[in-house]
Length: 190
Image (cartoon, rainbow, N blue to C red):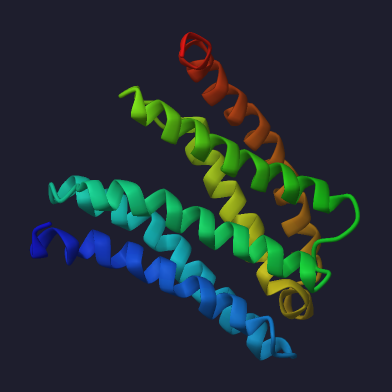
C-alpha cells in the first residue's frame, strides 16, 4: 500500500474515529458531569469526522480500499460501544434496550451481507435513507452520551435521545430490509 494513501487526511480522520472509541468508553468509568461532557465532545468530534472523511476522499480523489473498509467499521465501533456503555450505566434501559438491540443486530447483519455480496462482486450502494438513519442514530447517541449532564443543562435531553433512538431503530429496520431485499436474490442463487 502506498504511504500517501494510508496517511491521507480522510484515512487519518477515520483512524481518529477508531481511536475515539476507547476514549469515549473510558469516560463512562468516571462519575460526574465532567466525564459525560468529555465523552459527549469526543463522540461529536468523531461523528463529524464520519461526514468529512468520505467527503474529502471524494473531493480530493483520495478514495482507497483501506478507507472503504475502515469507514464502516469505525462507524459501527463508535455506535456499538456507546450503546453498550449506555446500557451498562442504565442510560438506556427497559424497552429502549429493544431499540438498541435492533440497531446492533442490523449493523451486524448488514455487515455480514455486504461481506458476502462483496465476495460475489455485488455492490449494494448506501441509500439516502440509510444516510438519514445514520444521522438520526448519531444524534440519538450523542444526546444519550450527554445524558444526566445534558439533563442538568437542558431538561429532557435524555428523553430526546431515547426518542431519537427509537426513530433510528425504525429507520434501521426499514433500511435493513432494503439491503436484504437487494441481496436476497444473490443469497438464494449461491
